[in-house]
Length: 337
Image (tube, rainbow, N blue to C red; front, side, top):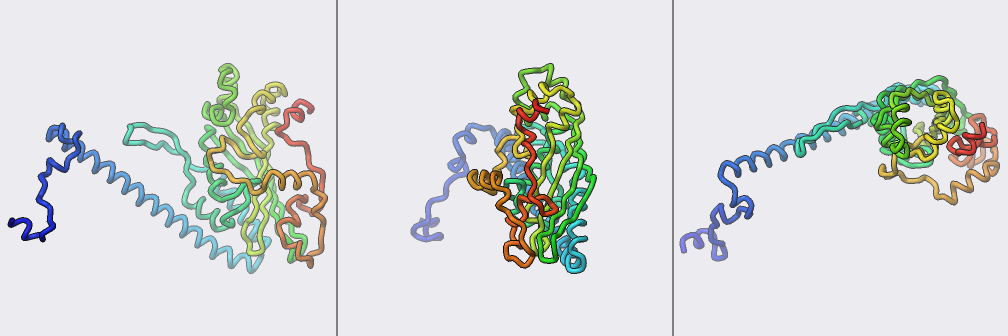
């Protein structure tokens, strides 16, 4: 009765340590049990270190983002056009070689693999210069943009992005601000490029071997649409995959074979759709936008519509509605050149 009187009338009798062990642990020797607990502590310690490292990276990215926002606030009050140009120039500089790629080791299954991960500076900078739900081509989100940069970096043996020209356009003081650049994206193909971007070619080893190590330069056009508060609300990139491959392969039939079923969407998105991409427009809205570009009329800067994204989203950067060129991803367009 002594144990119950010490801990109250409803106290349970003490259980021995062996009663609390799982059946598997009971069958282990003391030495095996010691190894088991040491392994558990090691895994827990690794998880804790990973969590702490992740928090530190997030704090670093937020710190950088805050610093950039403070600097831009001053710059935009003085020279908004110059601030927009500097933002785009810095963006090109930060991603001139994509994102870092490193070897990650999984201690649990003793395996290693290459992973790409944006730096704190890259993440913090994008969060400072773009709205959270930025329109990225026809999709949404800063995270998706970062993920695409990581894919480009991981799926190629080498990557280099070089800006060639930059133009800043603003119709009037109250009008939308657009920065347009041309750039070259130079990449070197690896087997992973074939596996992740051109998986339909894996059955043709001769063609695969001819592509591995191939250096291709994609001409790119990028348009950055700025909101009234100086942040990028729409980033529209496009790369000429067909023209670049025609330049190195020289054979339109081979180019059609390579590009035909490639995992390339909307002129810039590579890889499968496991990245959680979300369309900014529904299919019906996109169809109406493409078929009726002339519905977006020029308006005076005093018009309320001139301050909205729709007033310029389908126009050329000098404000004129121009006919759209044939899609570079159409096989008929490839063979028709």
